[in-house]
Amino acid sequence: MKDLTINSNISIRQAMKKLSQTGKKCLVIVDDNRILLGTLSDGDLRRAILNGSFVSDPIKEIYQKEPTILMEGKYKLYEAKKIFINNKFDLIPVVDKNYKLTDILLWETVFKNGGGKQLQKLDVPVVIMAGGEGTRMEPFTKVLPKPLVPIHEKPVIEHIIESFTDFGVNRFILTVNYKARILKAYFEELKSEYSVDFVEENEPLGTAGSLRFLIDQFNQPFFVTNCDIIIKTDYTSLYEFHQRGGYDLTLVASVKNYIIPYGTCELNSEGHLKQINEKPDFDFLVNIGAYVVNPDILQLIPGNKLYHITQLIEDAQKRGKRVGVYPIDDDAWVDVGQWTDYKRAVENL
Image (cartoon, rainbow, N blue to C red; front, side):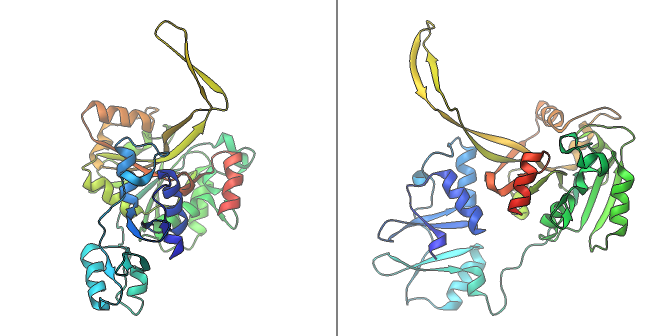
């Protein structure tokens, strides 16, 4: 229970990291005396960030102050199950008559004898952009295509695929170019329960150009991901976020915080010093290379031309398409496209 409780004075960034560590979608807010103050979900955090809050801001203004609760000793198990099922909650706080937190009911605990929460199967295809040369990972990529660079006992691409198969995804399409025959041979030898198809570029087409070959292949939104990022997120929530928002394209963004290790000079309108800001910090949402894309967006991609995903996003916006942003914590993903990040991936996975 302690792992799921936080104080209302912590920052949005700290709350995101706490959720990432617990693997849950909701936290319980209590004061120093463990009096229940509210609950905070991953959706609350995303909405706050997308509405302009900084990740350094406290959570005081964004958590749910009137959550659904159960009174200690005054509820039946079947009543709790009904609340879980009707509201799709992950947890329900239990309090005493003084509103002090005494327990936290979790879905998996309440339904431990059967009828538990079933992971919604995502019957959604995934396109993995696997054609790049991976020059930042030389000398490995002088021998192997970047997707086959090993992390522990398996290559990067298997880690990526498994992050999706955990949610029931079983169809993968790889766009390939550099050392394509080696990559194809690997999957021919691999005995897997999922299907892998290939789209081969005759020449490098950038981070989005080869998607044009998939026009008329899909009748629903699909995932697109780079082959050098491993993400630990709820892909069902991401997909639902895309659909509920009515987006044509949604990108996954990491919350990054940068501190300038110097005092920065702020000038007035006359060019004189106004003040010195000592070691200011800035929050950014960084595009990490994972997307949900509607099939009709592929019509915007020109044929046989070097074309990047950033250009696709710009062209979509010019045509009035809706582009969403799905924030995740910086600890929820690993970039293995360069050596410094690769070493971190080996340590953390």
